[in-house]
Length: 127
Image 1 (cartoon, rainbow, N blue to C red):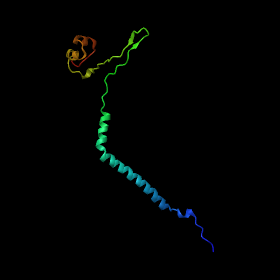
Image 2: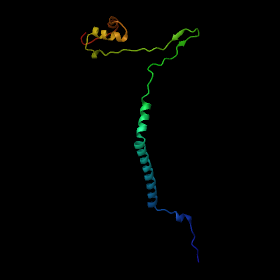
Image 3: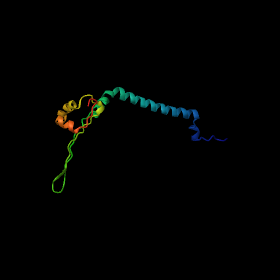
Image 4: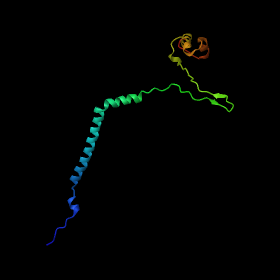
């Protein structure tokens, strides 16, 4: 009598449908895990995370951070850092006379209205 030989590979032989079902189950478990994590973050930790985002996005910047002055070997100042501003006005947007505009701008830029009218090539619709 011939004895039946047991082969371990025969025990683990899976059909194509079994392999497909296994891959599908693994993918569905991953999707369920991701979905449950999303629900946890949105529902249970949503308020705390929203507060953290507001704190991170609403920080104040210093408008002017001065740099050090540049000096030569004789300790003479060659360059220093100070704020400088440029004022630009588009002439087609101005509907008032040039003198009235200069009078309005004078206190803002610490200059006399006469100096502004001499320096500026403002041409308005009324001039």
